[in-house]
Amino acid sequence: MRHLAISVVVALVVAACGGVEQSRPDPAVAVSGGVNVATDVTMGVTTGWPAGEMHVEVLAEYPHDPTAFTQGLELVNGRLFESTGHYGTSTIREVDLATGGVVASTGLDDTVFGEGLTAIGGGRLLQLTWKAGSATVWNVDGLERVDAWSYEGEGWGVCLLDPETLVVSDGSATLTFRSASDFHELGSMVVAREELPQELLNELECVNGTVWANVWKTDTIVGIDPVTGIVFAVVDASSLPVERSSLAPGSVLNGIAHDPATGRFLLTGKYWPTLYEVEFVSG
Image (tube, rainbow, N blue to C red):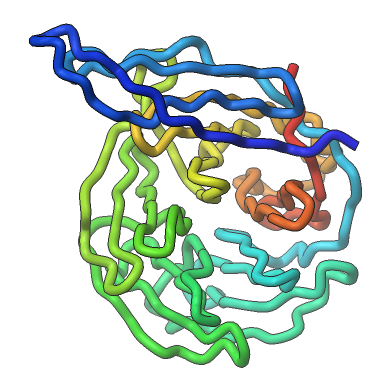
């Protein structure tokens, strides 16, 4: 069975001005044994080859709560956690993958709208809110609040890039880097797909030093180099066999969880009755 493989190599890039050498991550991405994408940095301007095209291959299907307005998915040591949204019904929950049943759930205050979710180590989860400017830290066991952080602007997706760095989206083409210890801002970048800003970045998943983002209201997932901001892969998930005609308006793809044990991904959407285990395959 073909599995997703992502590798990042470091190349020396020589700037055209003054022959100054800079060490920049230059991703050579091998996905399912085929797609190679390079980036080039010259005089501070980042350009890229067309992104590698990919599709999803469904390996398994699992039940999913059709009343869940899914905002984020996360696997922690084989346990599945989900953030759901909407005012008055937002939750953080642990879900039994095999049955779709809710193992444990904690409701958010009625005044906040749950958003993205990621594990931050130490048996903790971080959940964003849409417009409340608050991020909550939860214990994995028991789903109890252990801390709260504030921020400005909207919160959409979030993932842990490395033990010290979070990546956050707000529905625009900008990704913001924040401290994983207290959520203070470290910097930001605009994501480009073939030299144009990639807007509507939503749910995020960090995998082996790369960022994967669902593009809101589409069946597209993009792979992003967090050093250059270049989209190096575009995944078409439109072949997921969900009965879209039977779904309520707004029931879009929204939920990405990577399983490091298999290299596979779990995908679902808002109010979808099914969760899919997939591989990202080139071509």
